[in-house]
Length: 96
Image 1 (spheres, rainbow, N blue to C red):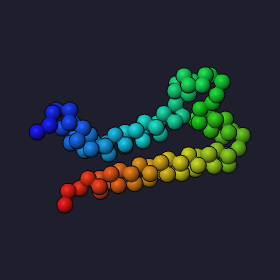
Image 2 (cartoon, rainbow, N blue to C red):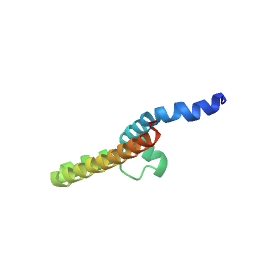
Image 3 (cartoon, helix red, strand yellow):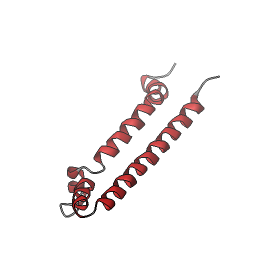
């Protein structure tokens, strides 16, 4: 009984929310250290994560390892939050 727009918003969008969350997470993790994005946002005077890790690897392997572990922990926390909020939104929309 609704318009095409209402059907899209109430049926299609909730069904594709998990895909939207996953794609945004993948995009964030890939673009986190992307040179072009950083260069556009802040200019050429800042290093990306990959460039910084490469420079630190030649001077101290321990610092590079600590940065890598911190990066993976940060990505794991963000992934956990996305999964938690995705499950919570699906749990509310289930029909008994």
